Image 1 (tube, helix red, strand yellow):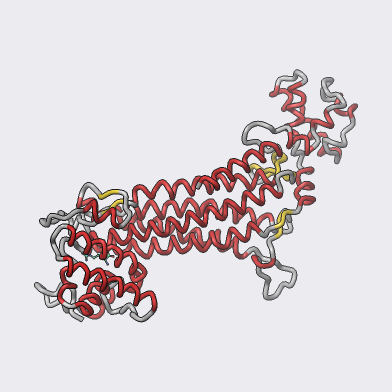
Image 2: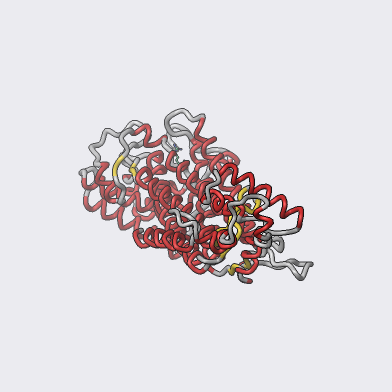
Amino acid sequence: MEKLWAGLSSGKVSEIADDFNSSIKFDKRLYKEDITGSIAHAQMLNKCGIITDAEADTLVNGLSLVLNDIETGALKIDDRAEDIHTFVEETLTERVGAVGKKLHTARSRNDQVALDFRLYILKETQAILAAIKTLVKAIADKAEEYKDAVCAGYTHLQRAQPITFGHHLLAYAFMLIRDYERFNDAVKRVSVSPIGSCALAGTTYNTDRAFEAAALGLSRVCENSIDGVSDRDFVAEFISCCALLQTHLSRFAEEIILWTSWEFKFVSLSDEFTTGSSIMPQKRNSDMAELVRGKTGRVFGDLTGILTVLKGLPLAYNKDMQEDKELAFDAADTVKACLAVFAPMVATMTAHRENMKAAAQKGFINATDLADYLTKKGEPFRSAYKICGEIVGYCIKNGKTLETLSLDEYHSFSGLFESDLYKAIDIENCVNKRVSEGGTSVASVEKQISTVNDFLHKI
Ligand code: ARG
């Protein structure tokens, strides 16, 4: 096959070089964006009087047919082509004749690939936004189901204070809402048209870049043609949004793995989202959650990859930039796959109220409430804290809990204790007294659930 750029050179490169240089095997997935971009380009050339109406019709119809034939499978993308741009242009020219060679007027593959990739990232962003929304909804529904399920809250993985399971789950809903906002905010930086930057310096033709951008649904054109073909910030930003989202999914996955272990048994996943062991009949493994945690590493790798590809590049286009594709494809595919499995996994999981409550009743989780009780009776918090620490030490030594200590025993630590202390340290009471905004009481959790649901309705 003659090279698109045969002219000065023979266009004959070694097979090894050809294979090494070619990107068709992975950039073929940009066929739709490439053809959509080319249709808008032909329309712009026509509008600006650079090609005739008849030529534009031929190009637009020809491109639409190429798209249709790829989608129906009638046209196979030839893996021997250099890249998807070359393949589409050559196929078009074979089909419509010499007019096909006019399509590349006032355009270069440098601005063409930047455009295609922006359209692709926009499409993937929309798919990810929808998938995040589905997961947030699943979490909000689970939080509603368990808004009053008392459970141990942890710091340093040590039992810290009693919380509700719904409250804990909602923390993830809010992380994911931030992820949603981050992806959504990036759209305004992706939705910028580089087309018309040409190779790097713009063009001598009297083109209409704004018309072409609008035809593609993009918000505006880039201001600087050198930046237009050199900028891959939108790729790095997209992958970095993916990486942070994966961080959140991975933390959640890690907790699910812990919670489903026999050491915790706070949660069981449905059979549909667990696997068994080939040798140990008793096992239910949380493979999906483990894979989400594991796949996070790939996305971090994609982020490191794109930043590293870009960091030493002189302006403007360099072939290094072809390396951006597989990184973004991998990040998008991974994030979509993780979100797709996570939402139904959460929606079908069951929490074990008794086990969670039992955990909340151990570990002197209400010691802060005991200190608050003394403080409210007039003891300064710092000394109340110390007295309660001594009481916990006494309980540990004597095999007692705060609930089973007698009032006489309490009096040996402070005369401020009265019989109402038992109510103050009752676990359910400890939870429901935490009415501060964002806190763990059922009322507060209900408010948080409506905030999440309001967000979901708004988007
Ligand atoms: N396959 C190339 C890429 O993905 C397309 C742009 C080629 N431009 C060039 N000047 N060789 O970056």
